[in-house]
Image 1 (cartoon, one colour):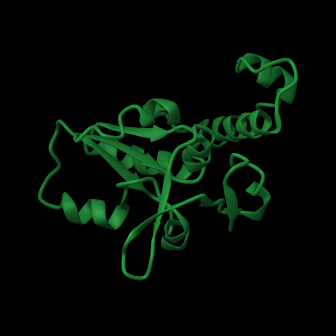
Image 2 (cartoon, rainbow, N blue to C red):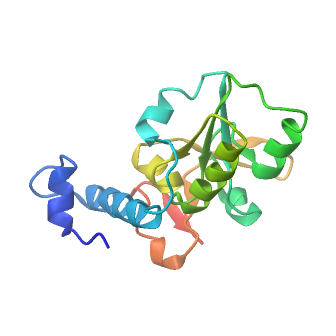
Length: 173
């Protein structure tokens, strides 16, 4: 088990001598992601790297969370697993790159393993939507008419995770 003191982890991640509250939260997300995905071996992408590729037309984002979690917020232009399966039922273009995510990275890592078995080009978002908040990533929700609305809410799956999102985001569960 990984059990580095938060100060050592923060130093290893390049934080200042006294990490801020937000840096401590980001370090917590990273630590918990590493622990949760120790047995999952799939290609990954960091949230800050993903942001640089959001406008890439060959990128397909897939949110593997449950509908109740997705209702709170999603990454812009992300598909649910059902929408992904429906859209690419007849085949998936080999030149497309898939990035999967969930709250932290475990469920999406397991889903990525399934896609890799199908020979698809897939990456798991390190730290999931929580890491996305620490990278300042935009989140969206939809109103009853289906209109996209920016949001700062993020579903954290469990109440214990409420202090893992970046400070400017509201954690709900």
